[in-house]
Image 1 (cartoon, rainbow, N blue to C red):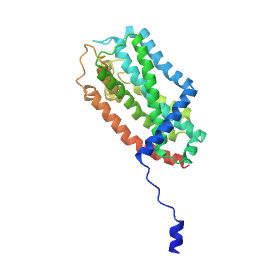
Image 2: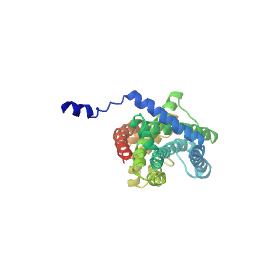
Image 3: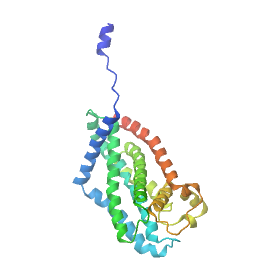
Image 4: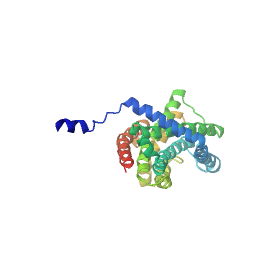
Length: 281
């Protein structure tokens, strides 16, 4: 009897190696990038909006928004970068919700692949999409008068910091995309949260004229810190005095890195757990 029980019992699941997670994740990322290639409208519409913001604020509102010590266009472009890569993170949630809705996640479950690879591939492909969007925006910014006035190394760090923050935001959107029933709900829900998050910040105007309570919120908003860090790394602060208060804007790079690490520590395990629950339904 003991022999029979041992022979019919299920073997313990094999632990998935980290290498397999990355290899499978790269395959999923390639699949998502091929989708963008076959449906170029996804890329076109994700770049039209930031280009419109650049042109609108640079030529329509720019003359009416004075920024001491620096030209408004150089003040503006890092804020547009921050807003765009954050909105780009919603592609993660919408893509996962669409895959859930169409049953593609169930197909992935039938394959001998790591479950975490779906999330890794999804978030990685969206970062690569953000890279292309940032390149297009940089060209647009240069055409309207934006310039990088720091070293090449500092500029690269500025772009990497923006992309790292967007990657961390993608894991939040991954959790949302696995909870809500459709990509339309993801887009609507994320817009309600992200739109005020990017406007109650120093993305488009300095926060010094905000009401006191709103200014405190804006100064500690991580969008403000990643924008301020980008301005400093791109050399777009001009002769303006760097803020000494609050701490979040006096040390924007450190504050942004703390947010990136915190978001990843919290939302990567939550996303993996939610994926396992959603895929088992």
